[in-house]
Image: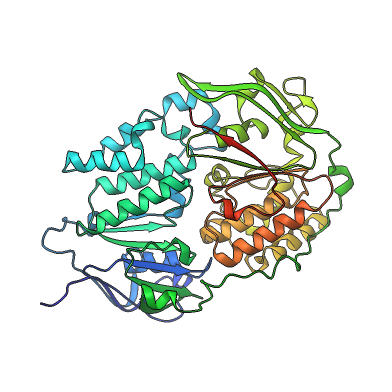
Length: 486
């Protein structure tokens, strides 16, 4: 019996010259196959998916679909795609950076249950199973703008699963999820393969490929390689699979012309005394005491929804509830006359919320420069010195070639590198890194860890590092605060 080919693209050439691969694309997904698309940041993985799913108009080639006799009417119903940005962004058109911490906006936004109730699911038992595996019951009454990045990703995945498509495509499927949630999602996807659903995962590292994947396509420099079996691919020494350790001794960071002016003499960078944060009947943080001294390096950990981002919002002066709490930042008690800009000038910050809010159609160099002023966008003229410093940071992160490209047209990994450069450009006293390696390939993860380690060696630098992957922590991190979910 001839095996059905679900997706077939033969010698495909996109009509958009700016999104066209360097060679014609040949790609197929046969019945019972499950594919990983892997490649370095900026290699063209997302463009490949957009081409083989028909989102890009073809100038040449033949694209065909065969979803079997029980397929939905439209191709868009048979293929469902969760992108990297779905973990962070554009849940609503009027989203703004501090929205999650504004209780009034939280009350007005729709809750998780209402969003999911719009999906038509044929089997109530399947809906219950999806809810159970993803932990939806614990967040079903939460407003969507109040969700953590991990919870938001669970919501998008639940929406996708409830629609019962024939092919599921997940980009960076495990980012933003704590270890138990990652294991549960991998198991749920494996279970889906037993029901006839086919899965395509878009990943940046071999360790993100689950065992149920049967075949791999590697993308490099806007070219699609041949299809390998998973075993064949894992036996290869490819650029994507290679782990480099060459950066630790070779990173030289730019020096800031305003280094002396930026130096912080405060002894206590953070001091929380019995801090409690509540939204309605939900307690996010309960009677927390936490002191961070100048120069300390902390890891902040906890499960999805445990309050990590809420805690950071208090430090970064983004959460209005800070004024009702006993909080001291940089030796000054909150509410004693300092402005939020007095606080932010000492802080460099990158987070899922920042990535979600930063959808500016401006050049990459301007993204980095906005870190001088703690703004979402650049609204001031830079000095010659500042322009030189921005260029130097772009070079350190290996992305100087992107300086004139629009931020929104870059890959998610390239965007993350730019936002990381933005956090360091003003040489801040406190560096807050909330899941900084999200979406980065193996090589860039090593590069960024080395940059963070080099930055930590500068005098008077304090770091708070949030991650669900303990193995990603730089060696300089030697203290830990673990939050428990209430």
